[in-house]
Amino acid sequence: MRFDLDLRQATDGFREVLRAEVFQSAADVQGTLLSQALNDRELHVLIVSDRGTRGLDGPATADEVSTDGKQNWANFVLNAGKSKTEGNTGGTYGFGKTIAYVVSQANSVIIHSRTTHRGKTVTRLIAAAIGNRFVRDGKNFTGRHWWGVNGDGAPLPIEGAAAEALAARLGMPAFKDGELGTNVMIVSPDLGQRTPGQAVTFLTESILWHLWPKLVPRKDGVAPLHCSVRHDGVQVPIPAFTSRPPLARFVEAYQDLVMGEEASLTFQKRAIERSTPKKMTLGHLGTVPFAREQRAVVDDGHDPDDDESPHPASPFTNSAAHHVALLRGPELVIEYLAGPIAPDPAVEWAGVFRAADEFDGIFARAEPPTHDAWNPDTVDDRMEKNILRKVLRDIQRAVTERWGTIAPPPTKGAVSTAGIADALGHLVLGKAGQGKGRKVRTAPSPSHSAARPSLALVGSTVEIVDGLHVSRAVIDVVPAAGSARTALQVNVGIALDGTGLDASLDKTLHLRKVSANGVDFDVHGINSEIILEGTHKHRVVLEAANSGRMSVLWDVDAAVGVGEQN
Image 1: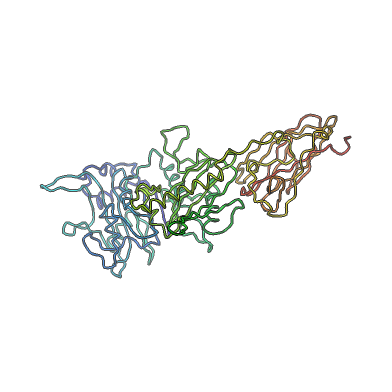
Image 2: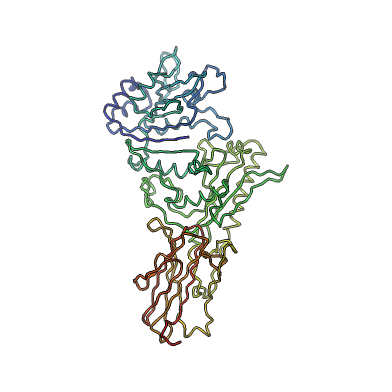
């Protein structure tokens, strides 16, 4: 299946086609800005297209009985608000059919669809607008307007070659041989105080944050949905999951939960079940913690310092991830449900809940027309209400058990130990006993430390640098009394249980940089030794590139340099 968006600025010739061949007598449409929009030199249109669907099938009129039960043309074009009852589909209320009119400042759209009807392929095109109710010749009118063919007072679409020709003049995406689908052109879309460029960015980012389960390739390497965005005919790429932290972590949780790919060692899976009147699995929850990640800078019109600016596409622009993405059959993100914030400010977590398919209808009925929440109070059936409440309650219980308690404070003197964990390592998130680890050295006891250099942790961070996930630790090294030469041994690995590390668990792990007092040393691999000269305190910066999926642990040891006396 393919889903495409194309935002274009209308040329003078294009606006003339709209005025002369589509929206004739636009000035007579009361309650819309259609006439003004068609004369606006800054007019834009947004074309929303799908392919790989069956198009808007069924009869072209609302009163004709469908022989196969298909009424999609009539329901989408003529009957706003009709509920869709098919299983595992996104629509339930049907009000989404009117959203194109709502986001149009002219309340006007053009619909172009190729489908099959009575065994034959048919192409249809019609324009429509929603204005104010009015009275004419003693009759009440709803304010809905159509431009197509007058079928004895009923609005009919232009069909066949005439529809194809007009669609081509309007710049609608063409259909390939045998291809079915629909184009909807929104006239004068409301960009929400965004520039056209910002609006296109917002669209691409919104696709990423809300449709990503459909964009994840399956085991055959093919994703169920392909999306594209264009701006004035120029392709705008959909960003990669990894370029929009923390989205890749939700994807990893989904891959572990639904596809069984075991993308992360720190992933936990939990069945959400009901025991009465019989045992039923209502869905599955997967969660994964990770080091807090630096957010991408995206110009989608949002200004974090301006409360009046448009909201960002990303739910996590200004906050840490502590949410569960709620999914059901269509696998579109219903909501990012907030849970407890991780007690360590350097840690985030992501979760995914996938409802069991046999209960899809229950979850669908709990959604408002905007399909952005599950609200048990909107469901009439008592059993369904209880199922929904239990699912939401058990999700919160599960994530609270993992992150809802305050982490104990570090023991006194912990910063002077030889093993220094990065921001994620404080919680020791690597699974214990995996791989061939080794124990890190412990700090010497005070009675034997007088003649040894001392180490003190200044701080640690996790950042994205040049596209790499980088763990950084800053330490101060104080030479031993009377010594002007200090040997510093640096090792990096994946934390096992807080006292052990194993570099083999992350094939991408390597030392990226070691510097002292602003001077870089030549390092490579996962361990290195450097010599610090002088009796003064040395500020040492350690950097290791890694996958970001597991906890990095630094094992640092200092000794009097060769040639010095203990």
